[in-house]
Image (cartoon, rainbow, N blue to C red; front, top):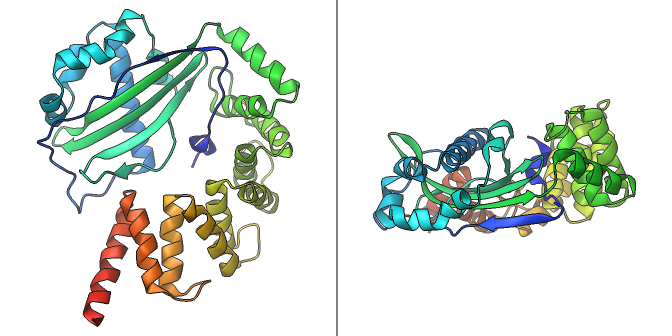
Length: 338
């Protein structure tokens, strides 16, 4: 899993252009309960295809072709005139989003299934001269995943790449931890500059040593996986711990996993449960399911099926299909005991 998927990045001197969310209609066909959500990597490909298609439609001044490829539910609740009123601003302003075709989308959170059965996903594309933030919702039809709702915000910089890179590096050299993290992320992804994992690690470390929790998490990832630096699982876990102590929910979950598997640290199920609980309380859906599993099995914590049901329920409410299955299984068992 790429660490940049958790990143919250700082941009410089942006001009924001936004459009409203266009919702689908009432005649919605939800995702069937037994249909698995696509994997995170598959979702990234779906999102990329959607955004590239939208970018091409904007460039060609042909929003109608994009609109006609959306789901029947979307078209049933949103006329083309309404869609054009919302998104025509991109055409009017001459926005160029085509650079997203060469950039991997970063997801802010795990994709989820909404109560109405939509696949919900949000994240961003970081470009050399700005950023595209998106929220998409999809229905699954025979034609594949089709748009059921969307919201796009475009933040573009008025500077060319060289000026942006120079400004970012200047701030990083001056000790700005956010700029150091941002520079590291761009170098790691080859986003607007040649990819260089070794230099990326250098800047992650600089920011991490200043207490930047996201940089600590990312540096830990690089060390555990040996990217851009010699593999050092113990040091990587140490940085996960630093970020976890600073309250980063993803780091808390990663640290818990290391404690369960014994990678880079001695196995300790009790401490793992503690970190899973901390992450779960912050709404980290994977941690909620992992903590529920430990409660169900009495692994690292006293067995408590009632609490396990509660935490599986929280994860299921965020669209975790596996948590939903475990929840239903435990609820059936509880009903039989009555």
